[in-house]
Amino acid sequence: MIDLITTTMSLNFLSDQSLAYGLIMYFTRNFDYFTKQGITGPKPIPLLGNSWEQLFFNRDDLEIRRLKKYGKIFGVFEGNRTLLQVADPAIIKHILVKDFHLFTDRPLPTNARHPIASENLSIAGGHQWRRMRSTVSPMFTSGRMRRTYPLIGH
Image (cartoon, rainbow, N blue to C red; front, side):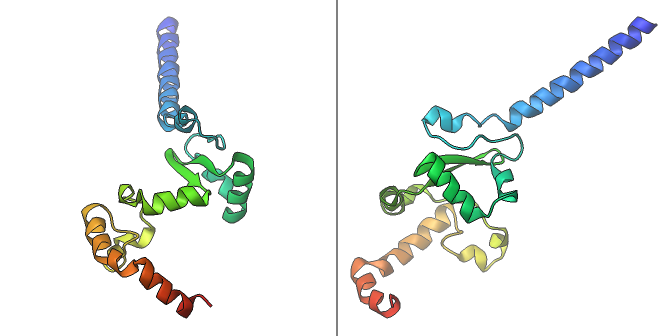
């Protein structure tokens, strides 16, 4: 009888260990993503990623610290989600001008489900974003921007 209880307790312990191991593997499955890409960044922790650092540092100060430590391009994790941080103006310009069409779906702020807020170009996604951008883009030609700059640049 004692052997049966001991065996049952051992099986419960093993299933608890397996569950804990499975959860850790699930929540850390992407943590090698940036390393595989050759991109540096702070080491994340399970469940929180690098978000825990925001509890101790102002977000702006944290970004400056990371920029100094890891360079102009580094990767961080928001939970298990990968975020590439870019601080190189040439690369940012390339992303915003040449590759802008590749970034149609962005994370939504909390008020994005509001009917008026969801009509914002920076919140829209997919087909709606493409339709809105093709409508708005002609308004921002370089000539119009040059004529507008003296009005708002000072």
